[in-house]
Image (cartoon, rainbow, N blue to C red; front, side, top):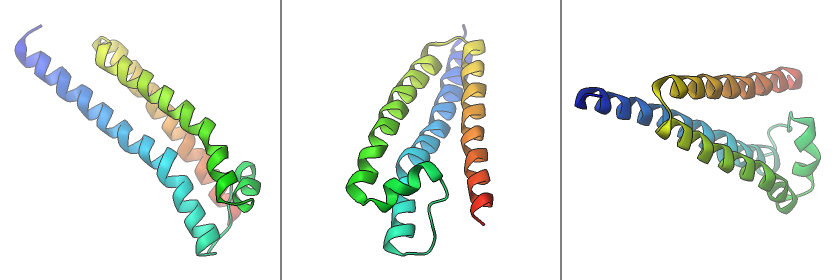
Length: 119
């Protein structure tokens, strides 16, 4: 592999990882925090996710505790994703990237369905 293709591959790999970093941060950390702040603190809406609604209304301690398994799954998946992208061939990196796009798109669609159901 030439030096230029190594640099290109590293730059592409870093771009993929950076884009997933933002997605992971938003969906695992920011979404529950924004939801709690908007629904409980500001009282400007309701939790659209029927699975989380009762935990949100039970208080911040319960709401944080219920997210621990989600955080663990997210961190484990994220570590595996980063390892696969860093050590995979170009074809494997593309597969991992497309799989992550499908998963994040599924999360977006689920959120949109909940939002439209809540309107």
